[in-house]
Amino acid sequence: MSTIAQILKDCRTGMEKSVESAKHQFNSIRSGKASASMLDSVKVEMYGAEMALNQVATVSAPEPRLLVVTPFDKTQAKAIEKAIRDANLGLDPAHQGGVIRVPLPSMNEERRKELAKILHKYGEDGHIAIRHLRTHARDTFKQLDGVSEDDVKHGEKDLQKLHDDFIGKVDQAMKAKELEIMAV
Image (cartoon, rainbow, N blue to C red; front, side, top):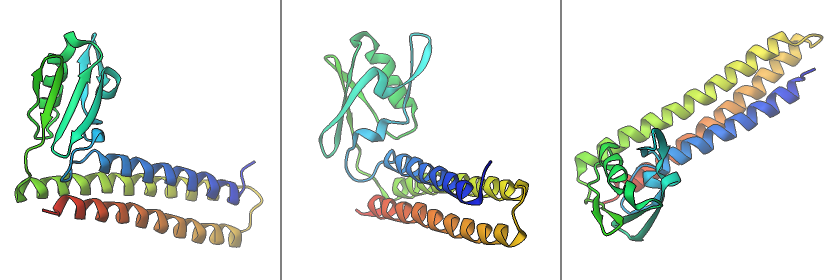
């Protein structure tokens, strides 16, 4: 039997996961310096299946403006190179002796604004996930048996505060990443 406290606890856990997911997506957006997580969104067509890049290669950032991708299977370097190029990240990888070097072009104002738009889309995805959790919890409150209307109202108030706190966390992470992107 669920209680209001249990529903709020479950909702908090879900919202924490939503914030972490949004932050992870934010980290995949390129800012001024190279980061191995920038290629997390790249999917490689390999062995008849689509696989995440980090499952088929190691990614390192030995210099601030360079990523080095080392395929586990050297024969798949061309497929990995193509996947990076096709990932719509504005990167131009070059295959050299078993490794793929991915130089990061300097970002112009237009590219920064493009990345900021992508960032805001990821932020909105985080907001939507949190709103869905709130709606689900609110619906669950209404289905509880033997709970007074006042308790439900108090639960909804606590739920709204939880929602606002987590929306704020997503916004805070988004603003920090936006400052990072826009820094020249």
